[in-house]
Every structure is written in structure tokens, then in C-alpha cells.
Image (cartoon, rainbow, N blue to C red; front, side, top):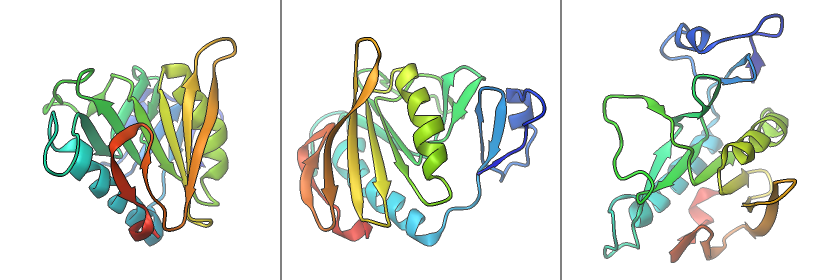
Length: 195
């Protein structure tokens, strides 16, 4: 993660002016360039996206594969605060009752996700945990997964309302676990292929 705007306040126009293939995020007037993910990161997000997508994201309601009811998207452009707090979580999910359909003509998702997933690496750990997680919480994200490939673990967090609003560490799953992982109830996920 490289910051481009330490000496001035970056805007959404700065983010849009980047080359089309350059992924970036905008937090508090600071523009962060995202480097290309490594193969392990790509494998984990691809497997999790496929598992969740097939069981929860293909249909509005139940199917033979799972309960459905979600949109599961890979690296969507999420506006936690319109054009001011712009992030690209590795995976994000919206319950279809809150987001009945996607706007096919826009790349901006302005409705805060119900769930996000960040796959951390030594390069992104501090940024994901200290910069992004508090902003997800403040914006109203209800569930978060932090996936650590080094120790083969998925940490599940739930937002707790009150003062101060905070993340509650709900449960973790490691290694070859096969389990229903909140908030995705109704179908077990096999984490083995992720690693």
C-alpha cells in the first residue's frame, strides 16, 4: 500500500484520474495505491468468492446449493462516505432485502455492505486493521472477516452498537475447518481449498 497524497488532500477526482488498471482507495483525503495481489491472496479470495457466491449469491432465495439472499462481489468500489471514503474490500456482501438489484450502469456502490472480507498480508495488515476496519465500523458494516493466510485462519467480527461502537471478535476458524460461518448461516463452508 503506497500513499500518494501525504502533502495535500486528495479527492475522488484524483482517484478517477488514475490509469484504469490502477486500483486505489481514498481515506480521509489520502489516496492509497494498491499493488497487485500475490497468488495466495488471489486463490483465497477466488475460493471464498466461489463458495459464498454459489451458496448465497446466485439466487434471491433458496436453491439446491444454499439459502441464497446475498450479493457477493469481488473488490467492489464501496463508497462508505460518497466520494470521500472509497474502499475496495477483497470481498463484500449485501443482503438482497437491502439491495434488491445492482445498478449495472455504475461502478460505485453507495449502500454500505452488510459484510466485508479482507485477506491480509504482511504488507497490508496494519492498513486493513488500523485504517479500514474503524471506517467500516463507523459506516455501518455489520460483519467483517479478516483472513490471515500465514496462519490459515478466518476471524469473524460483528459490530456492536452502543458507545463506543466497536467490533466484537465472535469466532475464528482455522485450517481445514468445515463450518457455518456468520453471517452466512444455512450452509457449511469448507475452508480447506483456501489454503
